[in-house]
Image 1 (cartoon, one colour):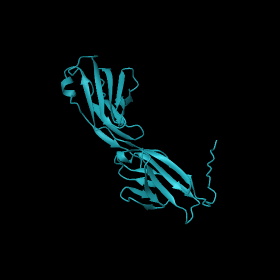
Image 2 (cartoon, rainbow, N blue to C red):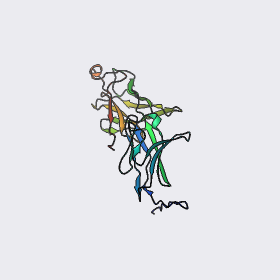
Image 3 (cartoon, rainbow, N blue to C red):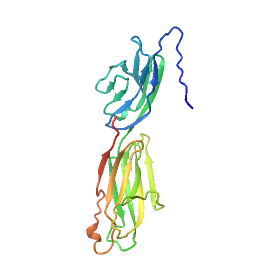
Image 4 (cartoon, helix red, strand yellow):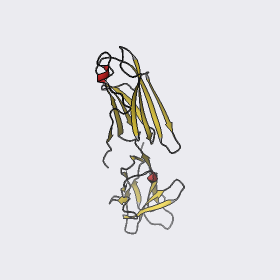
Length: 240
């Protein structure tokens, strides 16, 4: 079923400009760029198009009128009225409203922050004996929102196993931490364990890899147990 968009024009206002494609809600990582679409139809020389930022307290900042931008260091308005927010910070989280004549549409910018750091630990510590049960604990600290954690054994996703437990804690500011425990039996299969933290709505990840859990004479040489064994950060943000 197709929805019908109707714009009511007050009596005496002969403007026919309207929004053909409204902006959509956006989630981006802090430090990256947000983009809001607002495609206009039937604009004439006397018709104005505005972009505004609407704060949580209702206060409104004017961003642009037509393609004239108030703060060119922060915002850009392109020829089709697409509006870009540069170097996004937490204070940029708000509603953004496009107004064409009397037609209005708005979308919300949510700002995510990747975990400050990530730790991976094992208990009990090696050396191990065959079939020993160990707990691998992966923690993602201070992200917004709390990160999701997935576990891999080699290339196999084992997150849904009954031996995995996960706990999230979040504060009033939206920041929080996630702790996930994977309980496994030691074996000499040679496959590493990996935990991956990701932020909902983004492609940002933090990875940590733990050496294969082995037993016997090679245990002490094949495994190292610092809190942070290996960490990489990958930001695969789709280009705007």
